[in-house]
Amino acid sequence: MSGHPAGSKEYWHEKYIDQNTPWDLNGPHPAMTMVLNEVLKTTKHRPLKIYVPGMGNGHDAAFFAKHGHQTIGGDISEKAVKNAKERYQDITNLDLKVLNAIQDKNPGNLDLIFDRAMFCALPASVEDQYLESCTQKLNKNGIFASIIFTKVDRENGPPWAISVDNFTLKMQKRGFKLFFQKNVPVTYKTSFIIQESIVIYTRA
Ligand SMILES: C[S@@+](CC[C@H](N)C(=O)[O-])C[C@H]1O[C@@H](n2cnc3c(N)ncnc32)[C@H](O)[C@@H]1O
View: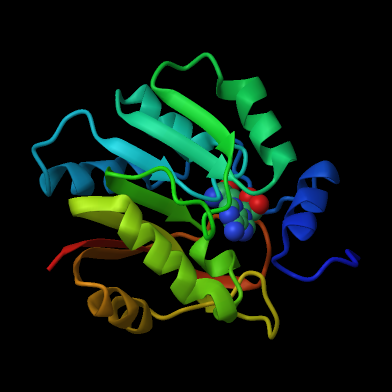
């Protein structure tokens, strides 16, 4: 078991070094086409400038870039970023780098921030800081999309569950409204994730 505090940079890095990554799908999340189609309904801007924080091995960031969008994928773990580069660095429009999604001020002026299992990977103490940082990175019509875990059968995270209602309250406080929501089949390869859900927010 890791001796590092849950959610710390070292905690995540060790998971990638040990290849103990049950969230990794070895390809984009199956709902990515749905997510992108819904996002494209909300804006005429093309290509989108997208940031995928906590991208892990980079599959979803690569998905957006392969669809022609200018995409930045970041992760706090150097090993995750190395893995992503080994697999995806030849894709044009894709910039992969070590980024702390809470502390780094860049990237900015974004059309879309998408995270899967990144918000839910954060301890409650930094959730609001993360959403605040995302809000500041988005342009005035920016969209925030996430695949969250709405039911988790485990006392201590990561991951931590959040209901769609509670997530929406947090986004409403920051001037967003819920544009799209759908429960999707669970993809995380453990027994404790009970429900996974897409949420997409636009500016209110
Ligand atoms: C459960 S994994 C999900 C990875 C990826 N989104 C996926 O779906 O495969 C959570 C990811 O968030 C990253 N992470 C955790 N805290 C972070 C932070 N403050 N900034 C950037 N990445 C972070 C971890 O390194 C890990 O790759």
